[in-house]
Image 1 (cartoon, rainbow, N blue to C red):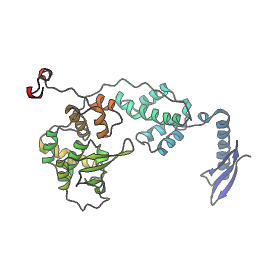
Image 2: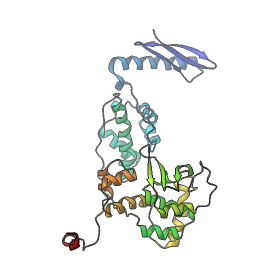
Image 3: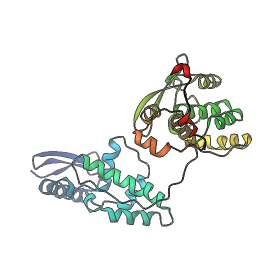
Image 4: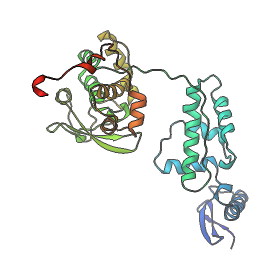
Length: 322
């Protein structure tokens, strides 16, 4: 049985069975002739899927829809959908993805091309591949120079807090002492905090999960000093997004006379400080919500600058303890 069209209101819809699959949907048009063309293309697509497999009909926009349905990030995807249009996923190979990166960002750095084009394109297609809808795609990255990011220190945070308003100072302290990302921190609600036990619920935006974080006494004090109606659904740090905190952040840095560091320097500082205090990477990853200990060690395992560290090798314990 082929597909037939029928009107529902002013819009034409279709229904029927192809290859034992029951299909129905809207043509999204009030014009009958256009609706018939849409249905004809739908029938061809369904038979092609039946005869040659889902990879023969899966388009990049369809793969993106599946990716977003899985609650994945939509970052950078609009530009990619406009570029690939209705290209079949099976026609997108490593070389074409690299060409797309150059075409979309002709003056962009290697890191920009990797981050904005290669990584999201590969993520979308490989998500579909995990659903057995196409083959996995591997794309060679453009060689990019890795720039060392400077982490915030507790001393830096204290100077920042001394010259920031209570909301902003507490926000900075929260990121440094819990490892929260800025997107996670600005979305913390009063219902997510228990100041009596020093616990915070952090909804992790990047990995789509939640974790509980410990708040040291100094952080509890900073949060307690925030003037707010403290409605359970109200944001603790009042900023609607990372953008609304940017200008006050810069102002506090200037007033404190400290090196300008980004929001992420606080999360960076959390990991670096933990590692330098002897906390193992597995524990740091768990406490800060990183996906792996390897990532923590590779990204945040900065060498210490104290040239006298070798003295520790020959330091002897208290004789009474031997």
